[in-house]
Image (cartoon, rainbow, N blue to C red; front, side):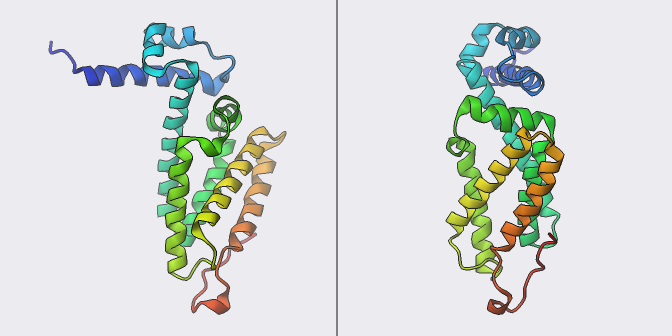
Amino acid sequence: MARRPRTQMIAETRAKLVAVARAAFGTVGYAQASMDDFTAAAGLTRGALYHHFGDKKGLFAAVITELDAEMSKRLSAISAQAEDPWQGFVAECSAYIEMALEPEIQRILFRDGPAVLGDPSQWPSQDGCIATMRATLIALKRNGVLADVDPEAAARLVNGATWHASQWIANAADPKAASKQAVKAFHALLNGLLCHPADRRSSPARLNS
């Protein structure tokens, strides 16, 4: 039987550790999750965990990266189904907030994430999120949809609003009620970014509050 390439073996080992760690972080949380349980479930040693991720925190960061990539893929699909770019932008941002209701995302990303990895605005993934949002807002402004605001500033403000709304939901006594109110308020905020009807020939429909 042919021996598997080293790169494939490394990828498989990392994937095993991330999978078992994600299951633990998503159910019992970061503090209660045990590295010995990770390695036993994956059929590996602690040495493998240290070699590939450095420590428990490094493994947690890898889980965050995987989860974030999956969320981005889902959000892109939601945006692509919208009637126009503006509605797609709104739908994508709203869906991100609503994902805070999902148990795994709620616990790993919005509850344990900041406690373990620190200020979310400093996470590597945030630069990519803001860059993508900025590009979308630049296109909307160019097409006369967005008001005369700086796309970079708007992207950072919207990104911050979605994140803080999600954290509020994740830690609320009644997450479903918080989500409903957060999305409603968020729609009102986004409507404020629209170009005034008098300043453009055609006006995209405003969101229902």
